Every structure is written in structure tokens, then in C-alpha cells.
Image (cartoon, rainbow over all chains, first blue to last red; front, side):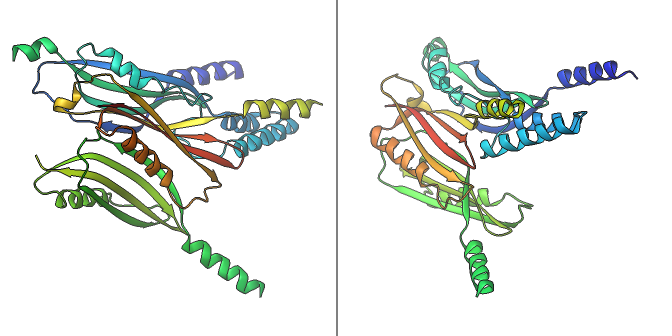
Length: 148
Length: 101
Length: 102
């Protein structure tokens, strides 16, 4: 098979095969006694990118030995510059989930909430990923509450 | 002398564990906070190989035992792992308030 | 020259990566879940970590104590975020708490 076709096929599989990864789930109390529940979802995400892994892959597939060595050096520098525990791929903005509380408050006009589920997940496509924080929950319908 | 120093350093290193935080979670804090209840439970393993996570249930049971007739509110949970040489201690530390209804 | 350019690019790209481990939002039940948006407080505590050599997680307890002090009547909503800012052979673990005080 020609190399170009191989590359296109490889890239297609890589793009199509986005793996979903669940890191953390927290389920809160669900109160169904006060009326009907209207579900809502809030999702924030950020581009995750493992540059060190990318450089490592580059070093492995590089044709010339000098390029391979350079990329190995790059991977090493990146690895030692970004020490620390990682959940998913690293991101370049640590405040992407800063607004979730404000969004949850805004989304429910009745201001009565229940059953909040917090999920930390990711969709991976090779060394690139979408790092996601999603909050799912229910608004307690005020009218229903009054009817009851 | 060098051998003794090395041995001593290794012993000291194996006794002092480095701790890593896994997760933290909190539920709503109540206004009434007179009766604080705390508990913890731990599980040891060799090079991170575990066969059960029952120590978490143990912490829940201990917490319930401290507040048999009341409402447990403001639950603050820390899940941490302390690493010693080849051995790891997984630990759940819980603090809450026991309020009589 | 090429290597110097490469190193500079790497140094620039490697700056300030982070990882959010968890972000939990919780709401009270029954009476407390009627969110009256009053005072929203924000607390952030961190701990510098060099190659993993830390021996306690007291900064988290400190953040929780601050929350208790700032919300004497309790909370109706709470958001806890645990994240790490990566660095050169070291990192900083952070706890961010946002809460709606009652």
C-alpha cells in the first residue's frame, strides 16, 4: 500500500476513533418530592494537548537520526518542565471550569435545584483531547410545586 | 561509614511517606455545627495492587455509627494515598456534623 | 542556531500547563436547595510540591476551615475544584472552593 494512502487511512482512524474517558463522577441528592424535574446540562471544555507524547511519537517516526535525537531532546525538556499529576492531557488554561457554579445558578429560573451530577471526562484523539467538566442536574418546577 | 549512612537514609526514606491527594468532596455545610464527627479508614497495598475498595464502606459505617439517630450533614471527604518504599496506604478521611432532627 | 530556536520554542510551549482533576458542584436538599443567591465566596489554597516530597494535605483542611468561617450560617451551593499547575521538576496543587452562603 502506498505510504500516502496509509497515512490518510491512519489519520482517518485517529480522527474517527475518539476515545471517551471518564475520570471522576460525583452524584448528589435527588429530591423528587417537590414537583416535576426539568433536566439541564452545563458543559465546559478545553483543548488538552500532550506535547511531550507528540514529540516522542515524532522521534519514533522521524526518518533521519538527527531529527529523531532532536525530538527526543524536546520530549525530555517538555517532560521535565511539566512535572506533576495529570488527569487527562494537560491544558494551557487552568480556569476553564471557573464559571460552572455561576452557570448552574443562571440555568435554573426557579432557583430550586436537585440531583446535581458532576462529571470530569475527556475525549481523546491521539495526543489531543477535549478535557471536559460537565454538570448535569434538575430544576424543580415551581408551578408543579405549587400544584402539589 | 558510607554503607551505614546509605542504610540509614534508606530506612528513613521508607518510614517517611510522601502523600498525594486523590480527591476532595464536600456537601452543604449546615448552620448548626456543634457536634463534629470524624473518621478515617485505610487500606495498605504492595506496589499499588489492590483487590478491594471495601475500606471506603468501612468509613461510611464508622460515620453512621457515630450518629445513629441524627442527620449527618456537611460531609467533607479527603481521599489520599501515602507512598512508602514499595508500599502504599490508601486513606479516606471524613469529617461531618451530626445534627438531631 | 536551529537547535537554539528549537529549545526556545520548546521553552515557550512548555510554560504553564495544568490539569483539572475534578470539579464538583453540590446543592443542598429540601429547604436549602432554594438557592437565594446571596454572598458567593471564593477560597483558594495551594501547596508547592517538589518531586512529590510532601507529607500532608493540610492546605485542603485550611480551605475548608476558611469556608466554615466565611459562611457562618452554612451553604446552599458549593463548587470544589482540585487542580495541578505543572512546573520544572515541581508542581503546585490547588483547591478552589466557591460557595453560596446562606
